[in-house]
Length: 108
Image (cartoon, rainbow, N blue to C red; front, side, top):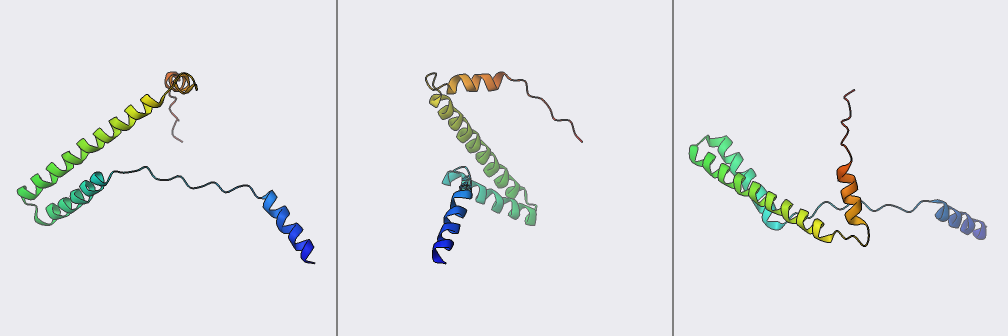
């Protein structure tokens, strides 16, 4: 009886496809996380008071966050470009996919 159970369990393991690990969310630098938290706090404060000083604070933090996000995006694109190589065809695949026309999906 136990031999039959072992055979069934082994067959089930072999027949089951391997689990795909969940994609990790992109790494967000700690400084950007702090700026997001500060922006939310400043926006909440401005919504409560409608003070011009609080609005200025919110705008200043928001602009600083936008600049940091742009800087982070630019550096990640630069890293991606630096990793491209003609020896493993990543360069050619990237150029080929960039040259393909982007077809718009019509709305239903």
